[in-house]
Length: 253
Image 1 (cartoon, rainbow, N blue to C red):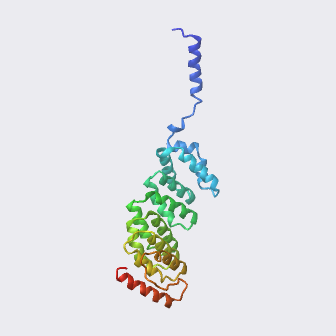
Image 2 (spheres, helix red, strand yellow; image 1 turned 90 degrees about the vertical axis):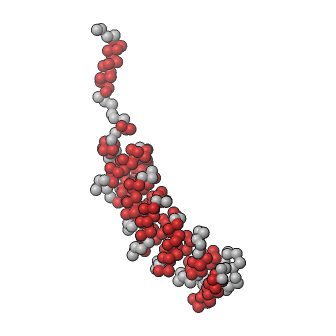
Image 3 (tube, helix red, strand yellow; image 1 turned 120 degrees about the vertical axis):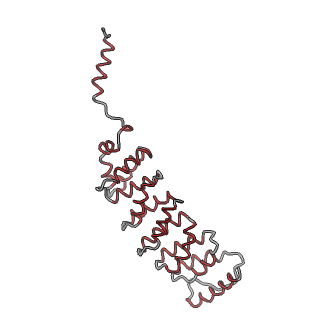
């Protein structure tokens, strides 16, 4: 069969250029994509925030399905350092992929403040996840004040029922003022059934800033009795005012 010159030229061009075409990005496997984008890992681990953001943006462009697969492949690599791991876990959280939760909880305990902040932000994506809330509540018993503060901060943002029940119970034995402050700030802005009782107890806190916060909320309470309470007063003077408020609450306020 005799082909026309035009058809022969088209076939020849197809043969020649087929060997020059690269695999479309959307058909690459995770391994192949990482091979062609090897700089992503270096950028994720960079100390330069701009490079880290560029790497995350490249992964986000892959979309949740392929992006998650690539992120999991990277997390499976034991060579990835903590800067890369926490960013990958945060990316998975953006896609509500629970496979990043374990890493986020790990870095909420990390000594690097930046890693802890990224982990905190990522965990907020799992508000309502009972396993995550349970793990955070367990962290409130940690001997590390930094870890307790980090866990309390995330739980405060989540506003879980478990948290509202537990914060007032943990408050009396909490030694770290920053954590106590989170407890008080969270409960005072809630509809906790024993909110006022808790705030009255906070009026005797050893930290004046916490006493001021509790009194600022409590004094707005309707029908509050006349009491001379001053957050800056001596402990004895404050105790007299607090006793009056306790009796008032005991009479159902």
